[in-house]
Each structure stands twice: as C-alpha cells, then as structure tokens.
Length: 194
Ligand SMILES: [Zn+2]
Image 1 (spheres, rainbow, N blue to C red):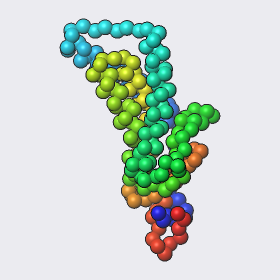
Image 2 (cartoon, rainbow, N blue to C red):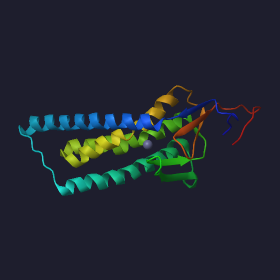
Image 3 (tube, rainbow, N blue to C red):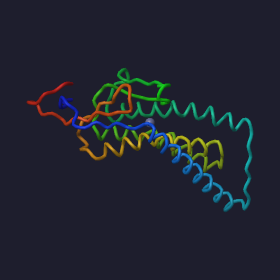
Image 4 (cartoon, protein in one colour):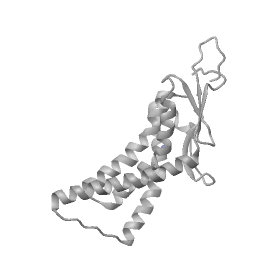
C-alpha cells in the first residue's frame, strides 16, 4: 500500500481521561445491566435472589483476566480479517507502566478496516458475555460483561477520532503508545513507503 510520507493527522489518546471515563462507563453500564436483569427476573419469577460467594468473586477475577487477553486477541483477529494483516506481523503484550494490555501491528491498515478491528472485541467480549449473563441471569457473566464493555471505552475513543477521516486513508499504529498515525493514500507519483 502506498501512503504519504508524513502523517496527515495523529490520534493521540490521553490515557488518564480514557481511564476515568472507562471507570464511569463501567459503573453505569454494570448497574444498568443488573437493574435490567432484576426487572426480567421480577417479571418471570416475581422474586429476586442475590447471592455472593468466594467462588463467584474468584470466577470474576479469573474471567476478567482471561477476557482481557481474549479482547486483545479479537483485535488481532480483526486486523487479520478486516485488514489482511499476516499473523506473523502481530504483537500482543502488556505495558505495566501504562497499565494496559495491547495488540498491535506495524502493517498499514485502511481507516475503515482498523475501525472494525477496534470495535470487534466490544461485541465479542463485552456484549456476548452480557447476553449470556442475561440469558442465564448469572451475576458473574453480567459483571464480566459490564467490566469488558467499560474496558472498550479506549477503543471507542479511537473509533470516534478515526471516523472523522476518509475510509481509504491509511493508518499505522504506534508500537508503544495509544497513538495512531493517519496518512493520506499517495498516488503513484507521490512519495511513498510500503
Ligand atoms: Zn481494545
């Protein structure tokens, strides 16, 4: 793919703002999910049972860790399916200093493709566990769904920024920071790097 030499725009997320927003979204979404589940239960059974146990807390903690990894894997699957990035070009890791898990590649992706890859984990690790939780009326799944939906706030913030630019623009991820470089597609006569 040919791209302009200099980025036409840089999307740079402020992690502190994203983290704060993520916390509030997690809180409200989780509360909303539990209220919704309670209403369904009241509608079906005319009674509401709430129970806590050590095992449930443990399942939430373990499930959360597993789903964070799965969230990142779905970004990679998105890079593969939507942008055609080869598996060997993908990197997954944890940045303890920034307190984030990340999935990245140094390949070019179109703006349209990376936007789909950004939101894929929201559906698979946020919405699906929530639906399972509502179907089973299971607090562990409901809480995991809420946590993972809240965890997708950074992805949505990126998505919103990217949405302002044309679909065919080319995007490169920063290997270290939550930052994306947007390049205009170059024509054959223009400067290029592949
Ligand atoms: Zn993500």
